Amino acid sequence: MKQKSNEVVLLVCWVVLMLATMATVYWGAQQSTLALQLAAILVIAIVKSGVIIDGFMELRHASVRWRMIMYGWPVAMSVVIAVTLLAAQAG
Amino acid sequence: MSTFTLTEQPKHKLPGDLAMWIFILAELAAFTLFILAFSITQLLKPEMFTLGRAQLDSSTGFAMTAGLLSSGFLAALAVERARKNKARQGSLLLIAAIASGMVYVVLKISEYSHLAGLGFDLEYNTFFTLYWLTTAFHFLHVLLGLTVLSFLSWRCWKNVYNAQEHAGMESGVMYWHMVDLVWVIIFPLVYLLG
Image 1 (cartoon, rainbow over the protein chains, first blue to last red):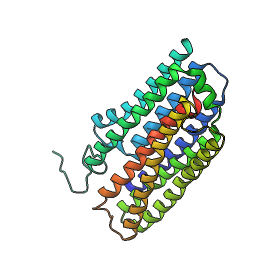
Image 2: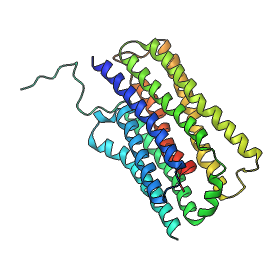
Image 3: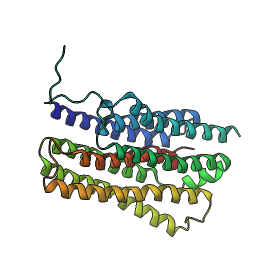
Image 4: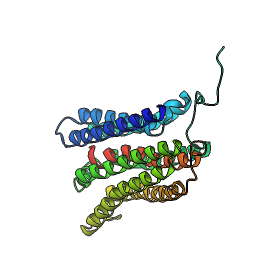
């Protein structure tokens, strides 16, 4: 029963990832402000990363330390991307 | 007082081998350098990056992403089947995962060929230098990941993995998920933002 539920979790993860990828491309094509586009696309990227980390990689069962390390990477990369793009626009 | 039985899962279980997780962290550190280089250079030359990005097709990027993420889903499903002593089903799922991953490979080669044909090669400008280096580094990881999945599929077909022994398979599939994770960040950075 537990194994079956894991497969359902994986299926839900895949559906969420596909919908989130469509949303990413949608926001990429929008002519909105850079700040809004950045916020939308990078939040979606962090959500997708979380689905991969907790769902596919199964770190939801792991220690908080490992989850923080793995979550830290997409969050840190998103911050770098957002800060440099906003600074480029301001400059 | 509760009794611990053999059927219970350890409270904080890390899938696969610890060595693979250390390797994954090292790989993420390497990709961090490429992302930093791309982002900082974009800060210095924003117009060049906007013009360069306009040469890329985001719908192709979507199809590549869908191929990789679907492959990750099928590979994760294969691990589940192996854990249920259905390694041969796992083998077939891994073959499907490889086929889905090949969608990315075919589209990426097509994109490389198209850009090279238009003259946007490694030396065209700084945007394309970083585009080629970053995506080619990831592309090589995809090829290595597909090789690992092929090996795991063969091992599954020989019923090497089962409910008791599957750490090696988990480690290989974790590597493939790391390749997905990196692409989730590279895709918007290279194709969409800015």
